[in-house]
Each structure stands twice: as C-alpha cells, then as structure tokens.
Length: 450
Image (cartoon, rainbow, N blue to C red):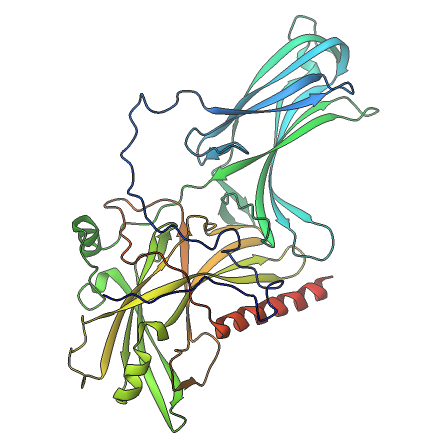
C-alpha cells in the first residue's frame, strides 16, 4: 500500500493567516510514532497523594493570611492548573491565619463555568453557564475557636475548613439537559470554556471583600457505544476493517453525486457512495474510518477521480455562539487519508466502480463535542468536490456534510486501531478559500451584532 505524501497545513500566501483559525496553530507536527497503550498501573505505582495548588491572599507587606488549596486529579493534572475528572468532587481546604482580630461575615467559595468570547473587536466577554456558591463558614455559626454567633464576628488565630464541592452532572434550562463541557483554553481560538474557583472573605457592606481566584480544568467522560462485532474483531485481531458491503451493520452509507468537466471537452457525473463507521461518535487521538465507492461509465474520468489524492474530505469544527445574536466559527481540523481497496469493486480496468478506504486522524487536543445554553461545539465530516488533473468540478463548496460527535473516552471492547501513518495535511486552495469566506461571513454578522 502506497500512502500519499502530505504537507503541513498553512494559510500563508493567501493573506488569510490573520483571519482563518487553524486548529493546528499550536503545533502543526503530528506524532510520528503512536505509542502503545501502557498497562494499567499497579496500586503501588499510582501516587497516593493528589497534586495540590495553593492560592493566597496577602497583606500589603506581602504576608499571606488566607489560602485556598485545590487538589487536582493525579493522572490528568499538569504543572499549571489543577484538573478534575467528571464525577469527582472539587476538593481541598481553606485556611486563615489572622495575627489580629478582624471582623468577617462569611468565608465562601464560588464556582463558575463561563464561555469566554475573544472574537469581538471590543473587550473580552464572559457568559456564565454554571454558578455555584459554597459557604464554608458564616458569622451566625460563631467563632469556630469558641465564641457565640453574632451578625459580625471578630476572628483571630488559625482556622481551617475542608473543601469538597460536587459539580452537577448536567444543567437544566428551558426543558433541555446539558452536560458540563470539557475545558477548552486556546490562545488563538475565538471562544473558550473556562472554569474558576474563587475564595471570598466577606467583610460586609462598607468594606470590600478579599478574594483570590484560580482556574481549574474539567475533563468530561463521554464514551461511544461499541462498534459492530466485525469491526471489534478486526481491532482485536489487528486485521484490516471490512467495508460497507461486507459489514453493512458497521457503516452509515449515503449517496450523492459530483458533476464536472474533464479535458475541457465533456461533462461527467460521478456517483459517490460515502460511508462512515458507526456509531458516529469517535474518540480523539483515534480516527474516523471512512469509505468511498465511485461509479461512472466514463472510465478515463473515473480513473482520474479515483486517485486517493483527489478525494478531499475534512473534519470540520463549528463553534456556535448566540449570546448576542448568532455567530459561527468554522475551521478544518483534520483531513482524510485514502488508499485503494478491491472490496466491492472488480479488479479489472473495465469495471465502472472504484473503491477507496480511508480515515481521518483525530488530534488528542481536539475539543470534545459539547453544548450549553447559547453555545455549542459541533463537528461534521465534510466532502468537497474531487480535485484531479484535467477535471474541473462544477461546484467549489462542500457536496456532502455529515454531523459526528467527538468524545474523550474509547468505546468498551478492543482498543480502536489506526491504519495509516499520521501525516501532514495537504495544502488546498479551494478549502482555504471556503473557510476564509466563512470567516468573512462571521465578521459581517459580528458587525451587525455590534
């Protein structure tokens, strides 16, 4: 099997680089070696203590007197912010160290989840979808070190409160249920999903509250349903996938056509049977298996179009925001790699059918599909008109689009296998221009909103 050579995606040279948002901007280099999944760690190998991050409130002289400590998940937390897994509690502690008596009304922690919009020309806006208040102590409870309750209590000395806050599994609004979205923080993206925890020492009406805030990560745990039995068997035996004709239960198949002119002399119509592996829910860092069957009575044109390099299939991400109108940000975030297959097509050159198998590699950094009130992250597999020498398609915009879902966990059963080597994506002027036009359209909508 000969695989096509690919080049890194880039938007320079067309004047689009300041307009088109590329999901590869952080790092255009894919991992060349897909490491095998390590065996489950033994109990002795797993750290028993979670990683802790501390955030302090200091006096003018720089002496810390209040501290909030947040514990991060052992396996997910990096060096910058704590990360919690879906279903975990936000744990830690709050401590006060007061050298003199101070009037304090309450000590509480505020949890907020927000959509941060940095696409507008004005200031950055934040739209909260989650707001929780957890009171650790109030003056009505009295001094924990001994005095009775009062509207205002003077605290002095050392105090500590354990922190254990449950985040809701889902949100309810207008009769709809929304799962908490995965954290998404990207310096170049127009939108991001951010979670914060804020320690607030409440002073009262005539004095400003003391507060300190930390950003924490939230890792969603969505999982696809198991694939077909034949697909699971292929993963288990490390064998090639069977296509739609051999495994009809494992694929969603749809038909469309592509019209164009070959050799500037004759019109052709190619029937396309495009299939995606089911369920239409895929795990990031894996791939989206796909199949393309092409049929035409013009065998010369069919051979041109049936080249793996002529099939232009992308994974597209759309971020939808309607907090102040409607704005969508479209971007390509993965291109399919194809190779010839003889399944379902005769091997002789006189056959009017050609079959290609392929897959779209999914970066581990992809934001999972999610939706909260007024904001959503959606994905689709998009098929553009074929591009081959001596063939001019009548259309330049996508000829087929199928919504799919991206999640963080693998399906139950054998681990999915990736069949092609991770490679650079082809530079494509037609695709570049299409997404450039989407950016211009979004900017026009943004001016209307403003």
